[in-house]
Every structure is written in structure tokens, then in C-alpha cells.
Image (cartoon, rainbow, N blue to C red; front, side, top):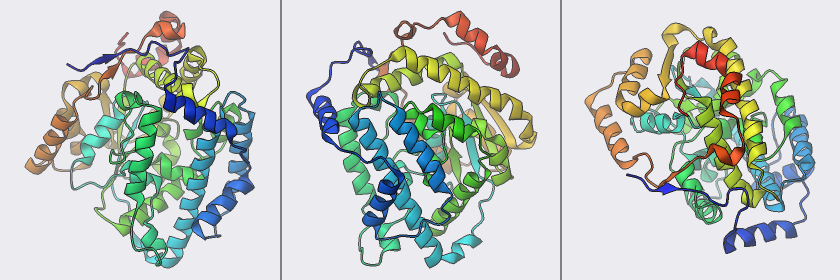
Length: 414
């Protein structure tokens, strides 16, 4: 049985010396959060200047203005977001260089990928990592999503590929800052991650909402058709497939819930795996995780505000998905309920593979059982999630999501 972990100081955190030092350091920084500063830093770091289609600059400007409007974001939080945008811009520069050096990558075909769509905290990460243990499938280790292009491929003066080593150093620092996140959502460099990190290179995702209060950015993102950004993602996947096989992908991102149309237009022959879970469990888990992280990245932790924001945001995701669900062809759609996934991981995978005409053979069985045995739920302890921390009304919450429970016959957990 896994150890139960209660975060007793969620709303009024008692910082560790390392956390306090990190927070104090952030306040000493004089950050220039402009688009110009980000692009100059990316060019200086990489020695490259061609960002490709510069329409992204408007999106980046909207995002950074929204970040600057968030007065509750502490210096270290702003510093992290600035560094993220510089990294995305660097990756974009390297992708443009790659396209010039290896134009033949365009001949690659993304054929019948398996794409997991589901709420955050609904089993998508476990399901993704489980299927990624199948050696026939290509997936995205976290360290590779951070820096998709090997430095020694882009720049002949570099002999080594240090991307994984760099990611492990960053992970060690991350664990010192946020030790309990390992028990909620472990960002180990080798764990299989979402393609949203690749989409962020085109600066149009819901990812910033996880790091700051950015309603202006959210509204801007939701008001625009995302098809061009999904096509951009496909091009990056083709490039990564060209660099190293195999050639059949397993992917996932909760953002896809509200982007069914561009997703279908970009990957028309995909198998779409949809996970379902009680949204109250999802919002409770999400709000706890974000409130814990806020002890360092924000001046004040406000659990009730986090819960309110993500209750509304998850509702938008699900309402948009509910309207688009029937667009997904029945023979390309596989519905997986959280409680069924927990009961039998392999049964769920077999259903998915049957939709994709992918054989579930003995080697696959062995690889997945090995993964399951080494990744038991609660391996690093289980954080307890307490509704009382958020002052939420359970019955009122369920009324707001009645449409979801009725349409998809989802079980309530709380």
C-alpha cells in the first residue's frame, strides 16, 4: 500500500530553505519580458536568426503582455516562463535550420497514429507511458520534447548530444524546489510526455494557463482556429521520425479535447483514444497540484481561485468536446473510462489496438507487464486531495457538469 501524503500547509506554505532561496533569487532579477528580449536571447544562444513564418510574433506578444498583467506572479515564476519562451524560440530556430539541411524529411508520412484525448489527471499519462513501452511505437520522452533537435545535427561543431544530460540536471533542481510533485505528476526526463511542448514552438497552446493567470491569452487562443498550429506539429513529428524511428506514433494531450476539428484535419487516419473521469476528481487533483507549485511561483497561494478557474476551464474543454464528439468516426474512436483502466490496463490497451489494427502479441504483453510492475500507482506516495481546502460545493459542481455525465455515462467518484 502506498504512503498517503497530506499537504497540511497548502494555503499557507512553510517554505524549505531551498524554496525560499529560489523565491528570493527571483526577486533580484530585472527581467525584460518583451518579445524582442526573448527572440534576441534565442538567437544569441543558438547563433541562428531565421525563425521562419513570423506570424508567431503577434501571438508571443499577446502572451507576454498577459504574463506582465499577472501581478501575483513572483519573480521566479516570471523567470521560468521567460526561459521557457526562449527555449521554444531556440527550438523553432533549429527546426528552420533542420528543414534547410534535410528537406527530404518532408517525404515522411505520419500514418495511423494513436492519439490519446482526455482530461488532465484522468489516466492519460499512465496510458500513454504504458503503450509507449511497446517497442514498435514511437513516443516523446520528456527530455526530447524539451529540445527536439540534436545539437550535433544542427551544428557540426558540436560532437555530443547533451540534451538528456541537461534535462536530468534540470530535473534534480526541480525536485529540490517541488519535491511533492513527484508524487502527483513526476516529470522524470525519461517519462513519455505530451506533444504540447512541440506545439509551443509555434506559440499557440493552452500550456501558459498552467503556469500563470493569463485570461487575455486564454481568450486570444480560444478565438483562433488552431489548424495551422496542428499542421506545424505534424511537420515537427515528421522531422523527428526522419531523425530516428520507429514510424508509428503514440501521442496525447488534454488540449485536443477542445481542438477536435483541427486534430481530425491534421491526422485523418488516427485512432483517437478518449479517456473519461469524474471532472470533480480532475479539478480537485489539478487545483491541489497547482496550489502546491504556487508556493514558489506566486506571491500568494489561493487554492479557492485555482479551483474556480479550473472548474470553469475544464467545463469549456468538455463542452467543446461534447459538441465535437460525433465528428470522430466510430471506427477510429475508442472510449476508455478511468475506473475500467484502473481495473485492467491491458484489457484497455487491447481494445485500443483492435481499433488500430495493431496486433497485441506476446512481446507487447511482456513489455507492458514489465512496465506495469515497475510503475505501480502511488509508487512515490499518494497525495490526498481534500475538497475542504477549496471551499467548493460538491452538489453545485455536479450540476454544472450534468451534461457530461449524461452524454457519456461517467461515474461520480466523490
